[in-house]
Picture 1: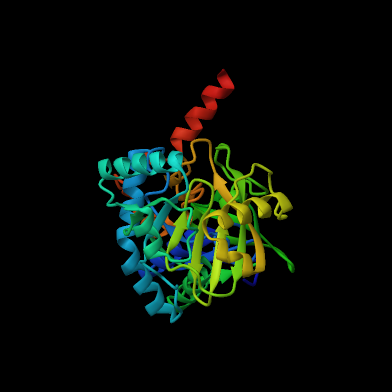
Picture 2: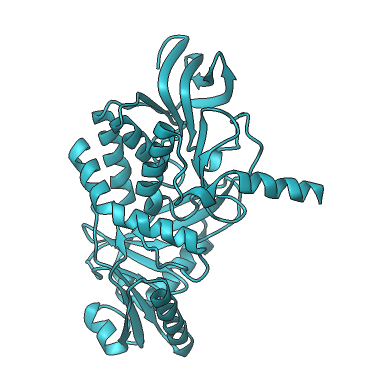
Length: 384
């Protein structure tokens, strides 16, 4: 970005998986799009995410309208991946091997029975397995595994590859991506929205007909907008990367840990969940817990080596549901607060945000996730 002032149809603040997916979809609909990212694209949560596409996760605790949005997004994923890979020429390492939940004792078995029942009630297919059947599917599992639940509809994508592929796809369809550049403020001026952009060379202005806030945990940190505060906060998550002999073919999980296989013999162990502000340092305790829980179900990982310990910051609001839709400022939209579901919800978020920003219509699928619910909630707390 050069010069004192620039003009674009749409400015997107934030270059994570949500911002890039929305940029790609909007550009394909003929809009000129500029993405402004304070760090490198994918910084924060996107490239740290395990990439599990699992609407089954915590299905009992997830509101039905969010489950429906997750399922909608999962159905869109194959075409989304095809479009992104075709446009940019890079693989996202999309896999449809499913998830295998495993049990080690009677309490685990009861939990899997309950989860299977809930899944059936929500229309999510799952197959209950004996210990022998479970170990036959994944031979390196601990002999102490006594049962399993196979969810074949769960898929996964390599989140780092996805971000790289989205960046390439965005560039291929004409999106301008500006990295290592902060946005200090957004305000209405002369019928447009003006973004004060802070670069190393100094401050400049970017004018846009529309602005999409997709800044993740930084939505309310160092960014002044006309919006009331909605309580966006970071939830720290640690992930351990292991490498060595390939041990599993699909995602393994129980109530304590998930184990995600990637190409080249890599395993991801995740993930912790900690309220520690913007701290991004890995801890010995978090690493120890992940290794211990994973070792209990997959003892062969003892001989793998630790290639990386990574930390991401998940964006969350009070009810842990996404915030998608228009705001009380003309031309200003939001797509944030996706918490642990940013990668899963990227296709649907991009589709419905692009539809909203080009037609003005709020789709029924995203109506429950409007910003007004949070504004009203915080006003009630303040009055309280």
